[in-house]
Amino acid sequence: MKITFIGATRIVTGSCFHIQTEKAHLLIDCGLFQGTRENEQKNAEPFPFKPSEVDYLLLTHAHLDHTGLIPKLVKEGFQGKILATKATAELCNVMLLDSAHIHEREAEWQNKKRMRAGKPPLQPLYTTEDAAYSFQFFQGANYNEIVDLENGVKVRFQDAGHILGSASLELWVKENAKEKKLVFSGDIGQKDLPIVKDPTPIEEADYVFTESTYGNRRHKDIDETVEEFRKAVSEALERGGNVIIPAFAVGRTQNILYILKQLSKERKLKNLHVFVDSPMAIQATNITLNHPECFDEETLELVKKGKLSGSGLSLTFTEKVEDSMKINKTKSGAIIISASGMCNAGRIRHHLKHNLWRSECSVIFVGYQAQGTLGRRIIEGAEVVKILGEEIAVKAKIYTIGGFSAHADQEGLIDWLSNFKKKPERIFVMHGEEDTAVGFAETIKKRLNIDAYAPLYLEDITI
Image (tube, rainbow, N blue to C red; front, side, top):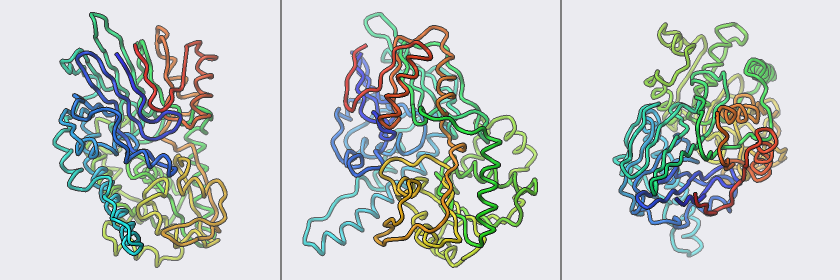
């Protein structure tokens, strides 16, 4: 069997791994490269395999760095099956259409400039029609059920505790009468986060492919993080400006809403005026409530009692563009939660444009910011950033709260990897920036005494 590392190699985004046997051609994830211009240019490059030859695409979860190239894959000839948990399949319907809309708008904006310069127009990476066409290939799977792909491969989805529907994949691959078990971690969540369950431990594997996004750091515990968040919101509102929270539409927005409701209910924060300005986040929230099988026990009990539906705060969901624009007429007291989480697209850029230059305002980052993104430039201390073609001064107070991350930290990843009763032959370290991935491979060697390696872009291995 040959495995090719097509993305998430010493970078965080672009997850995609190609497995070839005599009988099977599989992909694990098919994600967008995000962040630097160099990374994003890879999205337009031809796939290093023939999409028409791929039998199955297996998805770990719905985030675009794991799914965002699916419409391109289908457009270029894929006719196989896309297997994912049912919640992931539903979320992909929302996220891929939104992604396609962004690509169409970006192409339209670029083409206006190209026309004035006498240059030929660009085509979007894919269209909403391409995205909608890809949905017919999705097939839902249940957690903890072994699915026989009838090509010498069996797969089981285990809850990764990252976002709704997220999974680690167990693959049993049989070739030449020998069977090897591969485990792809997907993105491992940290324990005790609201709403989703903790990651499911896996005890057997010959080879493990693990993420390492926060493989070089430790998060604060959730109680400490909630208190840090409460103080940040309270201080921000006391200064008399608005609070801007860039948040991923799937996962982080729902967690932040849950925590704001709990803090309001406990009277630790009062008179909150919260705007969720993301059509995709609204749809994702509705999908979340339709999948109680993914909830932890505490959330499930609250849902059964109907306590999640009572707000205890002023909560406004905005879908229409004109309603989004009205929010920016509010100069004080608004908590605005908007996507994208890394500030590279979507409505969050408009809210930053109207508030980032105001010293009385605050921006609270609650998620990972990849290299090259607007969010990363802000948290690294840029004094001026370009937003929607205009230079904006960074005068607002910037808070970074890492403890809400949906990714396990170094201790969480080591804990998850420690569940294997027999040491795997090798662990491949992915989904981390170069220093982090290489460093976490060394950490695995020292602490678990298991051979570990961070693969390079388009590197092949034979098992």
